[in-house]
Length: 288
Image: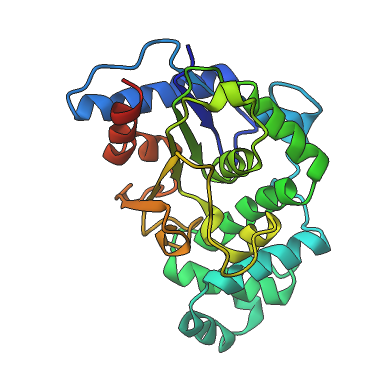
């Protein structure tokens, strides 16, 4: 009985469905335990490993198959998309500071065009410990989903198979939040498999970035919407480089933001998000 469908995010090429399910279950149960609530039943969570589709259906990607590895040069389309996304989240004062520096001091111009290099380093001023470079890697994978419609359809179909008549909560982390939202708004799940869905929980969502929303054919200024009856809680850390430190409530009256503190080590961590009390509360209120 699948009460929760989870949709994982970026950088999961070196793991498997079994490992992800074990990790997510542990984090979710940790959050429930923090609220003195009982653990989920063993069969409560279904977590499709959609990253496997990037390797032509294999369940586990090897390092040589990771098309988003830092050693793989960006295509022109990737560089343009990532630069546009960065321009939407970089602070003007940070970019002005970087413009005054010599380009050769800014990182890896042999791999990135100068425009992107400056934007990355400007973003690093706000999100130290390599936030700009991490965003580049993340946005490459996000773009791949947004602009490969056949692949995106296969990803959504795989996730849709995880639903059953008892599914009441959908949780998406990072790019998984984009996929979960895209799937629900398209209505591509059989109606008898979504009748019980009451809550979407997004964690560390790049839907905050206009370029990402445009990739879903959501016009600037257009509100994010879900089918009627599904509530939406968006959990974000102000230090999360993927979100630009922003929530989603300003983009839609349907979204309730919940701010958390995941620590400085990895504020985008899926497991830290999943253990957060807003996620546990959403499960407690909608899965019992």
